[in-house]
Image (cartoon, rainbow, N blue to C red; front, top):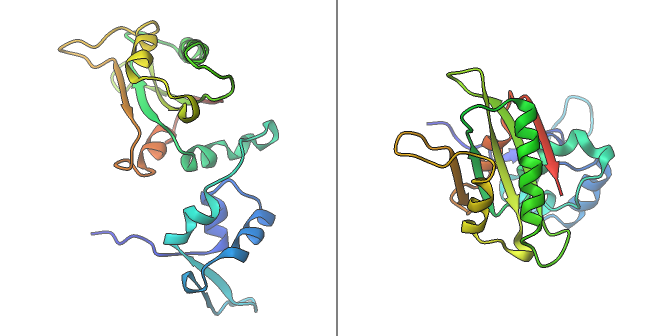
Length: 199
């Protein structure tokens, strides 16, 4: 059985979270001394290690990404708080077709909200394993202006064929603590052919 890593270096933290070096330095000022330790380093200064229990408290929260932060998108997605997780597997869809479908979904979901700018949608496009078409995984956050799951499914049925006894074409579930971060890692796993963050 694989043991869960307990202590993380600064380098490992910057690989996991979409933060800058300066943000890291600012946030460790508030760390619980019992959750950090130092080990000797071959280069002189000791290496700080931070316990896994402190990582999300210190580094998960950050503002929305700007366009110049595009390369941080996947790290940001994996640390963001989502309300729904899902996927669609249309009978026949190209990468371009799925991009249009997901952008349509985003605009359709916005019409269900009372206030603007309370919706975030991330999606990634993958190739189907058994044919030459594509499917997409997605994550939705609408926490400040919650959209009902049934209403989201109705919008998904506008862009994808419904489920049948033989095929599951639409999947949508609330994103809860059962998933932890595994759902975000699954939805943003590589290789994918395209991904986009809307909102």
